[in-house]
Amino acid sequence: MRSFFIILYPEAQEESTRLLYQEIWSQVFDHLDVNDIMRLSRTSRRLHELSECYWDSNICLSRILRRYVSTDREVKEFRDMMHNTGAIISGSSALQIFARVHYDESDLDLYVEETKAYSVSLCLSGLGYSRLESNIATKDSLDPGDGYPGKTEIERVETFRRHESERIVQLINTVREPIFAVLQFHSSTSRRLRQSYL
Image (cartoon, rainbow, N blue to C red):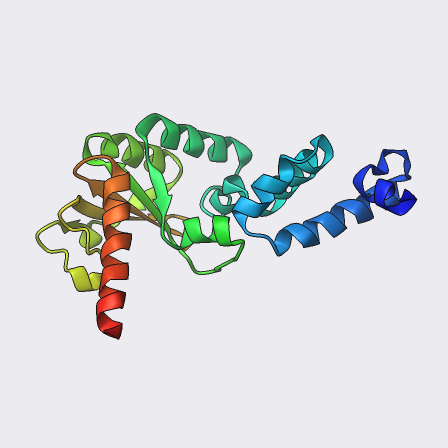
């Protein structure tokens, strides 16, 4: 019973034991899905604190954004812009957050309602990104085979590249709230997959 108490409440232990304790729980969390981590975090104050540490170090939007901006101030500015415009991240960057994987060459797919796209463009320009005019597509030129099957929800796609890096941000302008385009994309993709196996 004493060892179990130490595992759950290592406060009385020395610092090295606490670090080992956090590492053990981090490895446990690595093998749980997001919902299970959330459920486990509700069982005790200590496990809630450990799960928060785990989220901060392993499932952190700011960590993903740091690949696209340089400083903590820029990360905050980017997150504020997302909050103010209702922009959402989809694609491989969102997958990296929730699946706890890392793709070196991924770009950032940012969906935003067309009426708020100008604010996002200004923010990206202020962060050192340039719009690549040759990559702007209209909804009429989007082909479902190009990876944008939700073309009825997409107004246009703009590609931005940061000056000092090869990082790409795809700004997908949507007709209405961006979640509709994302859901339409994923539901039509799964529908095509089901049809291909029939």
